[in-house]
View 1 (tube, rainbow, N blue to C red):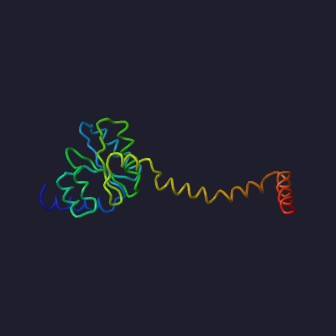
View 2: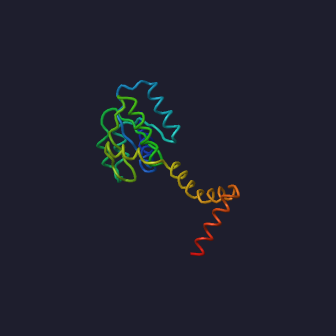
View 3: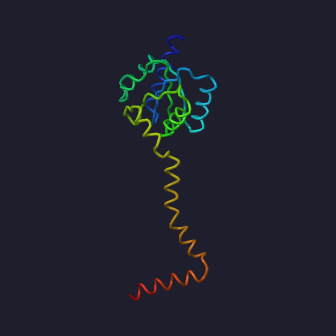
Length: 171
């Protein structure tokens, strides 16, 4: 790898560290090519990415950034799992680590903070952006569906509801 390629790689890594919602650092010693492809496929399905990078170049890319202390995690054969969504990459890494003993999560970074192993585990348990949006949409739509359900109910139910409202108004 010549100097220009190394500079491009450092720039790419710098962009990853700046623009990602979460970056997870893991050891992957002993993983087969098929297992790495499985990890990449899972990450791709969750809108996350996997990148193997030279630790020395990754440390150069981290220099001067708020998460520079994450450089301490970059020892041995490391792989970066990252995503814009602050939860996706952590979930992919945690799920893969549960099924594969050779994949060991060391820590990571999220929102300018360096995470230890337990921090990554905690982040992976949070709902993803899509899950939060679905939950909010469900809360917004619930009152409308309740009204629609009441309107579509048999006439006896509507009469009962009107009677209850009349009793409350009289009291």
